[in-house]
Image (cartoon, rainbow, N blue to C red):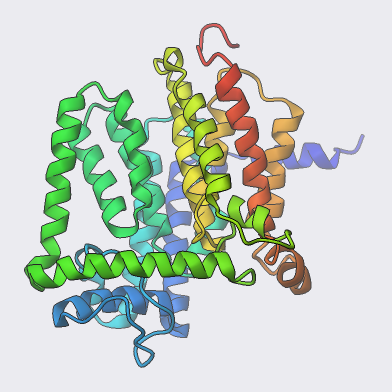
Length: 396
C-alpha cells in the first residue's frame, strides 16, 4: 500500500533535525551571514541610513534631512540609535553590514531560545518565522531587533528581572517607539516599584548617551526634529495608497475605499478598546498561557495599527503566530490549523518569487492584503482572550 502524500509530509517533519537546537542555531546564523554577504555585495541602503545616524550625530547634522549623496530615503530612528548602531558604523562598510545581519539574526534567536517557553513552542517559532526573518534581513531592517526587545522584556518580567525588562523596553522605545508596548507587562511584574524606578533610570541613560558623542543642545533639538519627521511620515503613509508602507489593518481598511479622507483614530480607538477589555480579565493574569497571549497581542499591535508597517515588519507578528497556536491549554481545531497555514502561505511567502509579480504589485500590495492573515488570527485570539479559560488544569 502506497504511503499517502500527507503521511510523507508528516514523516518528513518528524525527522530529528527539526527538533535539534544545533540545527536551528546553524540555520539562523547562516541566514544572517549569507544575507549579510549578499547585501554587502549589492549594497544596503537601509544600513547606510543607520550608519549615517551615527556619523551625522558626531558631526551634529540634522538626522532627519535628505542626504542623497549618502543614501536614499530618510531616517526615522531616534537619536539614541546613533549609540546603538555605533559598533557597526565604525568598521568598514562591508564588514559592518555582515556583522549587523549576524547580530540581528542572533539577537532574535537568543530572545526566543531564552524565553523559557516549551521546546515545542520555541522550535515552532524558530522555523515558522524563518522566512520572514529572511525577508527582513534582505532589507537590513531593525524590526528584527524590535521583535527581540519586546520578547526579551516579557521574558525578563516573567523571570522577575525587571531592571533588565525595562532596559529592553526603553531601548526599543528610544530607537523606534514600538518598544513602548512592553509597558503592558507592568501589571505582570511582582516588583512594580523596581520596574518604575529602573524604567526612569534607563530612560535618562538613553536620553543622555548620545550627548557623549555630540552635545546636549543638539540632542534635545533632534528629538523635536524626530517628532516632526514621524508626523510627516505618517501623513505620507496615509495619503499615498501606493506606498510600500501602511501594510497594516489601517491600510487594509483604507485602501479599498473610494473616500479615504478620514482619521485612522476611527480604527485605532476601537481596536485599543477591544484589546484593553481582553487584557483586563484580571482573573486570568495568573495563568502563563494568558500572559503569553498578551505578548502575542503586543506583537500584533505594533504591526496592525502602524502606518509604517511594511513587508519586512512582519517578522514581529510572525514570532507571535506560532506562540498563539501552540501555547493555549486546549486542543486547536481545524479552523486554527487553516489560519496558521494560510498565514504562512499567503503572508510569509507572498513577498517571494513564488508569487507572480503582477499578483503582488496589482493586488496584494495595493490592497495591503499581507495584513489579512494576521487580522484574522487577531480576531480569533481576541475572542479567545475574552471568552476562554486559560487555566492549564481545567481547559484541556
